[in-house]
Length: 252
Ligand code: NAP
Image 1 (cartoon, rainbow, N blue to C red):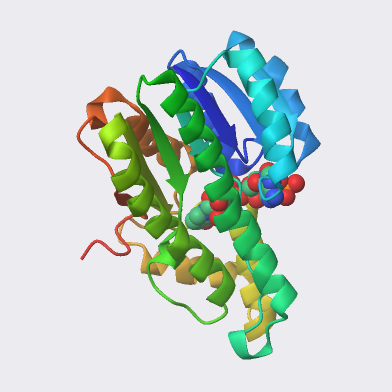
Image 2 (cartoon, rainbow, N blue to C red):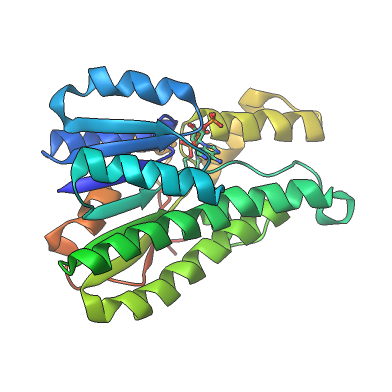
């Protein structure tokens, strides 16, 4: 299996890369963070190449795709994991430039890499799978989440539309919607909440734990397991879905 993972240097993206490589896949990694290059050596033969590229920039995507084809020779799976958190402000006070940047990275970036992957899969005519990373906060609106939530809700609907368009070509398109996952992005959010409400990081962390029926934060490995399943033949009849990986927050 030949896999492209964006956001591969981040908490969840690195876990997704590790899972695919340990399952025997060959991976090409994309991230804005140059430390993505370090994964080349640390994942033995499974990591075939990497690119430091902005997922929201068409020129970067086109250049990275050339590298992907040299390294992998084709694409069976694209995982769109690159993303950024939103500004802490409410919609009424939000800077339009901040709103646009979140949508550019989280939604337009997912579109650009899905489009590039789909074009290559259509050329190959061997089917394939696209797995997007949406969010719990793209499934329910929260105070301070206007930009991020709108971008991630967009990812879920992009997923549905592309599943309908590409299904006749044997290409499945799905998304995962992680809940509270223990990564720097989530800890930053808790620090911002603590600053906004005058509490502390630990108070905010405990609040989150009380919301989660399974009583713990998720891990990148929890998310990677569902991504790997969606990319596999075990999910051969699953397309157009957004699967929550949230410890039961929206489960009942
Ligand atoms: P993370 O640790 O911040 O990882 C995100 C990675 O994406 C970083 O390496 C980041 O690079 C990279 N990135 C950001 N903007 C990019 C761009 N324009 N082009 C290419 N790469 C870019 O965050 P994470 O928690 O692993 O999140 C991964 C995904 O899961 C995101 O889409 C996020 O929205 C989603 N998610 C996370 C949670 C959670 O609780 N953590 C919950 C729901 C959904 P830099 O570090 O250089 O910016």
